Image (cartoon, rainbow, N blue to C red; front, side):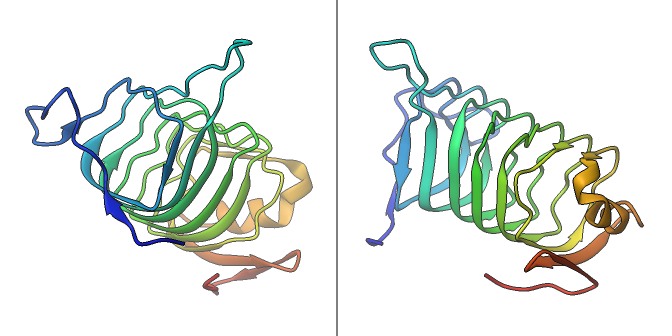
Amino acid sequence: MRNQVPIPPSPHGLLPDGRVNFRGFPLNVAAAVVIESADFTGARSPKNEYGADLLIMLAGVKCTDVIFDRARVFHSIDGTFDHCSFKKIGTAGCGLTGTFRDCDFSGTSFRKAHLIGNFIRCRFHDCNLRLASWGSSFSECEFAGSTIDDIFADIREIAMSAPVVTFAVVSGKVKPGETRHY
């Protein structure tokens, strides 16, 4: 992985809250960039010449205080994310790897997604968690109102056991109260 560089400035300037305005921006690949205090609400992946989405890929990024709410459609989200919002993003089959601290995924459908990261104090309220895989660590996370497929009943039992939970899923086993760093 090459050294991370700052993301180029937005042609739309700043929002009233001081965030860099990338709302609705056509986003495809962001690799090895640092993004701070930015708003990508409603960002969309561009389409190829056949009309198919090229998908959004974040690879080796470092994001702090960034909003990706309602952005569509992610193929992979990889990096370090602090205080970021991913509410109602499109993630069909997406892979989420890296470290996520104080992030909000509320209302997101993770249908067939792969969670392979460390989630610390993250919110998964009202999410569709019909995942393909759960190989992750969750520390002080919230799952209120979320749907977890019957195939992962053991995970559902732990995730819904309290308002804030800590557990890890490793080698097909759920380890309540334990976290792992990948």
